[in-house]
Length: 160
Length: 129
Image (tube, each protein chain N blue to C red):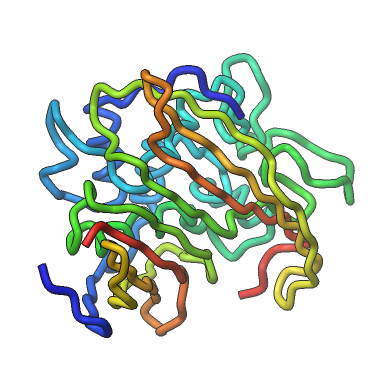
């Protein structure tokens, strides 16, 4: 993932803060600060983000059928969490904050893949973990947030 | 502000999580994975009992328990693991514990549990003391 322009906007922060149930005044208004997990919403500014329906392209959520993309039975998952029983899930997330993020900042984000490893899970079959590290830099090239995420692809749905 | 190792701060993050809040988070974050908002897809294609919350919604809500204590501008680190799924109807509580104070930082452990006492997020945070 690379995001060339992640514009930190008042309305976006407000809608994000509402969605996490946070009414703290610091997140509302023209000088709002961004909540700790706000950079996750840079997905909105990633032209290729795979978990957003895109104009003119098929989408794997339900419509006439349970999935908008039909696959051969037993076919592998892929396509961002769809199909095949197993799914991609978020396993870990870590942030380091180098300075507070505020309305008016314009960031770039670059992501590098990290380690991958496998584990036999008790509740979801074979688990494949993969790590990625994203650096968010401001309009002056200064590092604002470093994010490390770990995703896991499960062989089957997680047993409850 | 004085920090005492072992001090705890407990916050109710959400009572009876609504599907609409999950939709709200999908819209704000830009993560439209239908696992979280599309009941038909989640049950018939992915094989889950119903939709479930984004891990990042749980982490986002958990962040409030920390920033209410230290203020978002003091935050230096925040992270953790998603240890169990969060479903509509769940009620979540976050517990923040002062772990240590060193080198100008106060370090916390953070644990978010559901109404059955099951941990759904296990993490840490650090802030300028």
